[in-house]
Image (cartoon, rainbow, N blue to C red):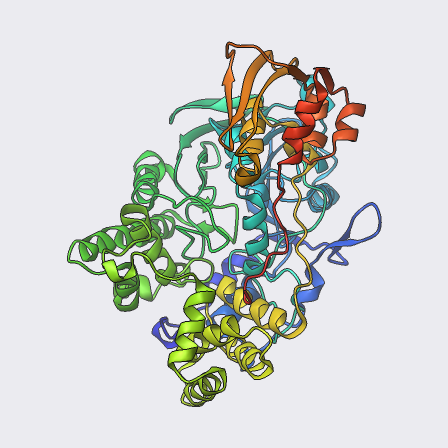
Length: 609
């Protein structure tokens, strides 16, 4: 990792982060209907003065900037509320109302942000909602700014890039339990906020914990150059699919000469592959969309702003910023490909990789959220997969079995702990962590191994410039010391209700306990009356296969109205019945299917076997 003295100190980011400040939410605490705190901006008041020894100075600086909360004016008619969730919410004033862009994660924080805006700018009605992309921190709070009834009545159009709904649901559906468990490490879900705990995640401070909602888009943008004029506001759209999100778009406000770059250019190196898990993103396409944005809008650009962090003003500075962000992802991509074609593995490339001096000196290119190390490995993975080509590594033992053999070869757990203690004392924390990982997996109850690994992970966290790495290290240390505190995992009812029939049936398929279903031979009809779709599904050889309008007899048919989708997907059959689920034929066959479904474990072990 790059040392902080590689970057010159300057006050431009602080000036930009404060520019246009109008008002803060006081107190900076947002509560849900039941009184639980879902967001607490005031909890970061400790981010003051010089960095303590337990926080990397560069991450401390970033967290100080990101923790600023309140309503800010970008240009005449465009406002942002920052610091009330992981992401920003943007308000664009029209002739009579306001267009809302990216309404945060939770209805509670979105409503608080809208209330703060209205307290300064007046009670303007919401004229439209825009989702820039398909991640939950950009749509989950939508019912905090408008209602389904208003959208259904045509009063509030909801705009999004083509493919939004499919990806908003699917990215966290099939592997959702595992992603959410790992996200708890990434965002430091249970860490105390403070110099020895959570100081932020680099992209934002953390995620709010309120009510997640979804209103499906009514207007999908499908090509670059499409225009819309809503409430007198003219917008030109640039589609950027397969960049930071599978469905993403940029918005140029012609009259204000302002470019919303969504999440493709922020004040950090972003993730080509987030450490919570996801599909690997296309760094080459990402860079290409930024090149295209410069070509399309650069001549008229006066301010560029994103769904995270603070804006950049002035055409020259904005173009430099966009160009450097473009070069960041292009250089990562191209140089990783150059080196893998010379025979280096992902780990080897990451260990020697250096950014060009200009990018090393740019604060916005530093690895607060993504990192050079794990992004290089992600690009390698995208092209080459998990196998590095060395057949000695083609069929390794799983971690537990491997650990037992390593520990035995090194003379037992006590000897491994002694060697790790020496490595830690010499400052080789990475090797100490690797040794102790083997020790804990070989003997999970060994008190010295657990205690020392927790200490080593904590020190690695304290020294990390990357906010998500820090959180992961400190979460590992916490779970070694006190055990898992649990990981809340649930898709919101709105998201489940928006499932397409195919997505619902695919979700059932990945829950089938294959060995338990080897001997089953079932054929079940599925009718989705609100969608006008019919499927014939079979369960054979442990495989659940659904074919739309499939031919053949079915001994049982299940009718699933839209209202029954959410409870049935959540495993609540009684609730689905109350919502109108209908079953005709041999109900015992449906019971057999449901009996071999195995729901994910939201509290699986990570730092112990």
